[in-house]
Image (tube, rainbow, N blue to C red; front, side):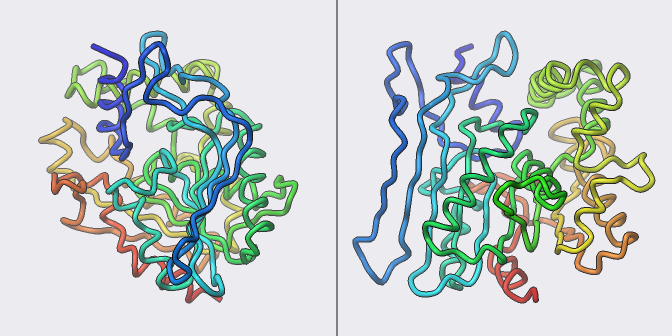
Amino acid sequence: MSRFTIFCLLAVSLGLLFSCQRKNSAGSGRVAAIPTSRSSVTADPDRPRLFQFEEPLETELIRLTPQISIPAEPPGYTLIQPKGETEGVIVFFGSGRDTTHAGYEMRLYETATDQQVALLYVSTGNPLEFLFDSTRYYQLERYIHQAVQEYNLPAHRLLFTGMSLGGTRALKFAEWCMAGHAPHGVRPRAVAICDAPLDFFRFYQQGERAIRMGASPISVNEATWVNYQLQEHLGGTPDEAPRAYRDYSPYVYEVSIFDPLESLRNIAVRAYTEPDVEWWIAQRQKDYYSINAPDAAGLINDLLYLGNNEAELIVTEGKGHHPDGTRHPHSWSIVDNEELVRWFLRLP
């Protein structure tokens, strides 16, 4: 099986909506390392403006396991800014910055810019960024600060959001910023995550179970590379390195009062999930213990317990579909883009 085929299977397994490109040994089909660059598209003054900032590729390939690698992309950001005054900024932590893709999350800018909200897509260059390395936090914070300063964006009106592992990044980055680590003072007003894994004790264990039971090939494939990454970067399994898993997870169910959540007490937090367990059993041999809905519910429940009256769990039914119409509850389509933007703008 080619690396390109494996990469596309990985995209399917996580519900990530990539635009896959084949790369050969000569490097065709992939942007070569380039100097730091900016570009903009402002041909029609009545349309939103698009600005690109890219830095050189750090590597051609991202290694997930010794046998599996995926193509890297140029790190940087893509900003789509509405005409006139910008009322807020949605910072999207996704698998890439290709805003021409048909994925629901990548089209969020269409709704946002109509309501004077800019979209800022940020990337470290790794489509499957886990944020294991602390330097990646500083890199992302630098991009956000740079865009805010250069394009006169409202720094006090930021919404961090993302789908799946992108949602994990959004929440982890929000906790990091709110804990006072951001050198440029970037802080979100709100966070909205869509079906993101949060408790990596649970996530590792469900992956091990999928491998042990020989569940669906997609489930086993995902568990294989995810658990390899976790062991490689956290120093072993949860039993071998419990403190590392606790420190890495943005939420842990078994910790009564999880310290990082204290930093989220004063910002709005939404968690979207569609726990269609019948679909998961039929299609992936997964049950309630193996999906991300318990993490979302536990996160919001604990934030409400801590006194955050702006914490909200959004549970949907029958809304999860890929752009081609394929049923999948682990999809950004469970988010009502227009309502999300209105909610953000209503926040004081």
